[in-house]
Length: 335
Ligand code: NDP
Image 1 (tube, rainbow, N blue to C red):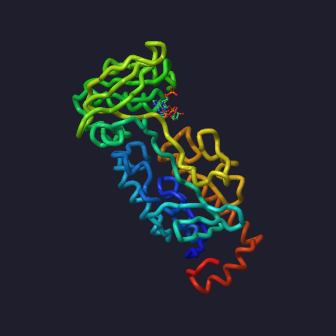
Image 2: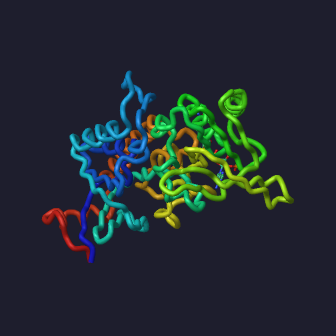
Image 3: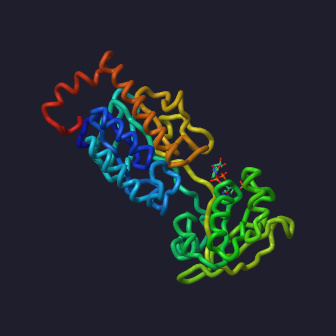
């Protein structure tokens, strides 16, 4: 038996998309709960300075920006649950969201679960994360002043971070598994013409070496020796991993449509094929992936949810009848 909580709006996720949805839904006086996850705040909480979020002329620390957004949502009545959703059930007119033994029923749901950085999953990587291996150049680049470092990946993220890291590092080696870079032409030109950056193609990382801090990488050049590759050791002090992201959508498999990479497919601006289920931020937007675009889509999703709920009042679903009984008791046991 689950403990039941009934809400008008449940927002899943607490990055800029989820929190902006909560600000708008709360301010529209909708009973709103944010299921914020184990690590509330999303990717910006592992960023240091955010310089391109409008309104902060001198920049703002990522965690501070997220804390401000959360307090703003709370000011408009949004409640927070710092836990992960364990399952959803979108089969009925009322949407069910499970958090262990707690059941949240909502008339409208905003999914803003974002995306997570991918890791190489090679020996040594996990152990040396935070000890020379990082997934965030803007957070950790500063620690590598005057040092020799590498970055892995061939997309726009890796190239952008490689350029950023030249501010600090004495040399940046870009390690790319393929023979061609995937990034946009302009980024390629900048990287290939940069005196501090060397690109090594057709190179994979086999292992990260070092006891308490990264000391070297074991590399394989896949072009040589009939594809089996020549192994070499590369001494360095830092490795940045920028090989893309994976959307956090496992929970929604079987309920919502996704593309091949698992990003949710939207209908219109923020809708899905299930009435009352909306999406916002990096969970569907693999193109822009910015705090400001995520916040913008969070706003749109909340406004769309509000419109949807207005229609529900005009055409009540069976939930409205159930609610009359349940309203006498804020929390009831589900049957
Ligand atoms: P991408 O998916 O574009 O690139 C990922 C890169 O990592 C690819 O080069 C891929 O290699 C490599 N890679 C993937 N898995 C592994 C692995 N296991 N081992 C080694 N290498 C691996 O991701 P990005 O994060 O770079 O970009 C995502 C989107 O965001 C893109 O559309 C990009 O254009 C956009 N973006 C735009 C920016 C801008 O305009 N300023 C900035 C950053 C991102 P391979 O090529 O061989 O598949």
